[in-house]
Length: 204
Image (cartoon, rainbow, N blue to C red; front, top):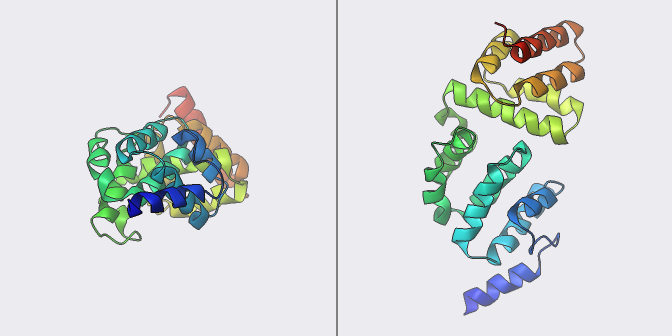
């Protein structure tokens, strides 16, 4: 009873008032919050519903087109912790969710978040780079997209472009076009635009 009361008290303190919302709307509301405030919101939202249905809702939100919500859904699943493990493991076969699920599982099993990316193959890391770039392109500022280049596993931009083209992410063209528009180096922007055109036309 005390635990339940505590959960209700936590729920009543929902800082951004998204507690009644569906997972997707709650995550969208949390997109504007700082990480600690967002975590408080996830906790309040989770306290108000059975853990099984909450995890299902979060994973459904992660399957949508918005890459930012995908990342936030897995942040919320980090707050859930151990009870989410079977469901997270079950989505490893879904290419869209696999890199996020692998990182979640690595951290859950005690890997330092700084090193968790080592569990990804080069291809998975590249797919994740495009997905997070799509989130930045949709919701962030141009300088953030340019900085995102530095987080790629590839040592050079030509290598990154080759591997991004090969990985087949559905948002590849939009990401490359946005990156070309944002980058201050004209030569690099031109190379990125050319890569976007080649992906678009199916050329090599």
